[in-house]
Length: 170
Image (tube, rainbow, N blue to C red; front, top):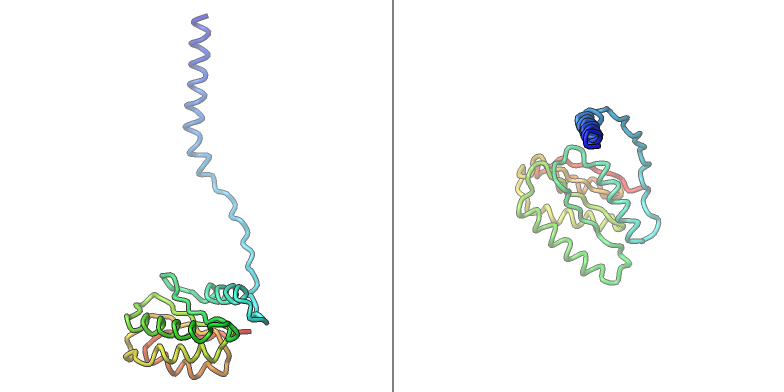
C-alpha cells in the first residue's frame, strides 16, 4: 500500500509540474482582439439638461484629444437658465484666467464649451487677454460652440501660440 501511495503521489506531482510548465505557454497564446465598434458622435443637446451637455462635451473632447499627453482642462458653462448662472460664470472665468496665468505647458489641452456659446467665447477671450504672445506653444485649445463666435475666439487665442481647434456644436 505504501508503494501505491508513492506511485500515486509521484504521478500527481508530475501532472502538477506539467500543468505549471504548460501554463505560461497557454497564457502566451495569441487571443483574437475584440472587434471595436466606433460609437457615433453625440449631437448637441436640444435642451439645457446639464448631464446631456456633460456627455456631449466629453464626447467632443475625447474625439479631439489627439496627441495630448495629460488630462484636459475642461471648462463647461452651465445653461443660462441656471438660477446662479452669473455666479458660476464669474467663478469659471476666474478659474480659466488663473489657470492660463499660471502657465499651461505643451502637451496639454484646454477645452471650452456649454449651452451658451457666446458666453463661453466671452470667457475664453477674457482668459487669454493677459497671455504673452508665444508662451503656450504645444498647447491645444478646443472651442465647442457656434460658428458665429469662432473668429473672435481664434483671434484671442492664436497669439499665445496655441494649436486652436474649433468644433461647431451641432
